[in-house]
Image 1 (cartoon, rainbow, N blue to C red):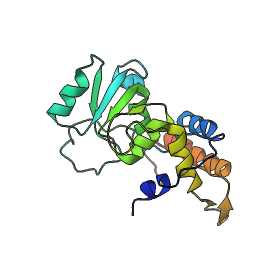
Image 2: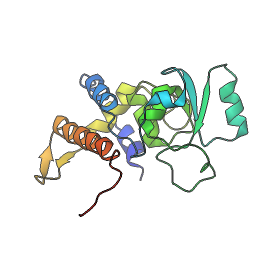
Image 3: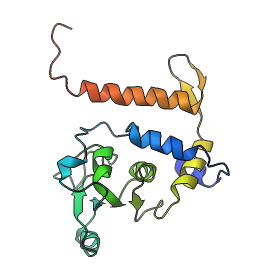
Length: 181
């Protein structure tokens, strides 16, 4: 079964901590797909101004262009690597979301990050979803574990670890070659 659908089927009632969690996920760029993350400036769009269209056909692209906003067409970084959109740029989720005010055609993973980053989801199962309610339900169904201590841990400790891994992955992208290993 779809774990996201299962989590959303049981809404959480306590949303107090969620704004801080979402700010942390977006601010520390946790959850990207591991592709290069040069930042939204590479897309030449004002922050949070464009419609991000992922893997859509001509009719969907025309609909996205109808409201006069800039349209960025790209591949969903969480989609399978072999698609009809292989010619489109493959960038990290956060790079794409930096420029997006709205996304269309996103996978569930990218739609969740969009909600965390304050980007509207225009279609799919999370279209129009309330970010606080969605993330509250998801986190209520989530259990965290520290893989080094092999023990359960709290959400803050898990976010600390995920932020560290994201930072180390960004640092490692600058490595061009390793010799003598």
